[in-house]
Length: 481
Image (cartoon, rainbow, N blue to C red; front, side, top):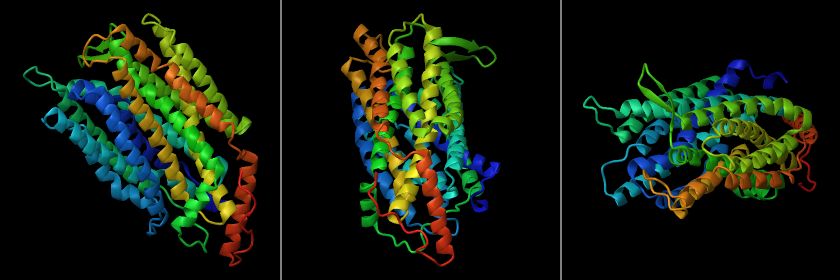
């Protein structure tokens, strides 16, 4: 329909939002544990516990933001205003997270608790409305997959930017004129650059996107009914479980990579850029390659899902990622080509999942409206953010706890047991998350064909409402899947 038409500028504008949030997401998932343990000097087990405590609260905070956003009404819409209001606080708190004052060990841990909790709340305040925005930009299910594809191409591009530049920037900013090195200053200065860029991109997302889909005209806000509708939505529970397991898979692999190359490889440096006197580590190349492969997966997601369906694409991608991850354990330090080849293949599988997840959440929002006559886009999309945070929480906490369990000591030669554990954190342990995600998705029942019928029925219903005939296509009162 013409009212749902989305041009290339708007698709790019929507993609900018995830470019911004993914820069911070990738910094936190890859470098924050390392920053706390190896730069600040906080114990790995303490950081793992902090991740669990702060993120459990943050996970519960996501649905609250979704509920508030659903009830927001401005001249800019429901969700776009949050991009305008929260962009600057997002950048400022990100800088403070990587700015640790000279305190005692306990003081540093308390400061980390406070700033990281604030960062995750601010992240929710902008990312939940941003994710929900896709559900009201278009009602066409294939356009949503396209929009989601744009989003994740930009998301992984943002991740590539961070992974390619973080360690070199920190190295440059850490050096003083006197020849001393201050890694904390290096991280703080690097975060200032990323924060300014992220805020600017969120503002462009606000300016270049539009909200087209309005809730049913007769809908009255009722938190009790919204929650009851969500509790009866079986596809939502299935996708929630699959999303959590997928993020555990990714979080473990991301959080372990720095430790893998620093403590398992005897030589960390791949090569040096002589013009800038900056060393490029294997970890940087490994992570950048993974993000590039994620983009390949994102691009493949739409044509493959158009051919075999979203559910089948999700299922096969996770099964293959799990099998390849198990094989990853067999590689030694001399198998650099195999390590990087498998990183590329596993990351293609992982990249294909994310546009499917968010497109399927948009389908679930439509399905909920179809079954109940009520639309709660923000609440449903906040559940996707909640799954993302919970998976990230479990993966991050497990990384810290497992390092402590295997006797990890920062900036020291690791025991054979610790090295074995770090290898398992890139192979068997994340593989379990991938395979469990595949098990969940087997029970997902919203086929693409069924969702096309749902979309058509909702368009008829909305057209009837605009014509003043609210009973044109009544809500389906049958049993939910």
